[in-house]
Length: 257
Image 1 (cartoon, rainbow, N blue to C red):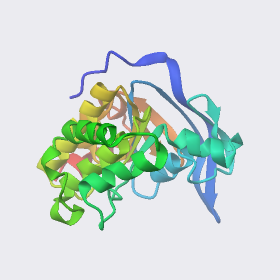
Image 2: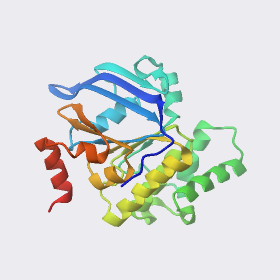
Image 3: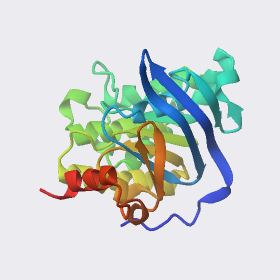
């Protein structure tokens, strides 16, 4: 069970969402969501598939537009930003995709240096190599630097995807189903990595998952998305002390054969 991170600053909200609503045609996905993320916190968003978890973080990153509501990220109202301002904000947000989103035609070094060269054009070759070595060391995959993504296991690709996300030193990390498709041992390694990133890089993170082992391992706080709203939040134990049949069924699916 994870110990609460003592560095969480509850006086500093890096994300504040109020009455967020999003529908697709006649299907209401988010029905008035309120959410805060504090500096230094790992916040886990739980929910069944199709409940709007991934929609939520895409809205936070400005990849989807909400129908209504307020989304404040690092002091900026996302809905009111110009395209240029939104691009600048995204540089402070690391988005770790389910499929790692690596370029198959590039080596690991080239995958990692691509966002650096694109966004920090004044870096020297020495500085680029130094930063790449730091993030590869952080995910314990320094030896893969000249390999292709196809030569790596699924867990290694996840790690490299996280390393590429870290390369621009984001203040916020968004993890979309970080353990999806991985075996139990590799999932444990990814969970440890998420906690290690939080500690080493002082990130604030939202982790989208339906994996309760992941939630219990990495979450300083858990929120559960049910029927388009966050209806339960607290520690893992507090959330799953509920007698709500929907919460109990979620737990039993994960932990009872």
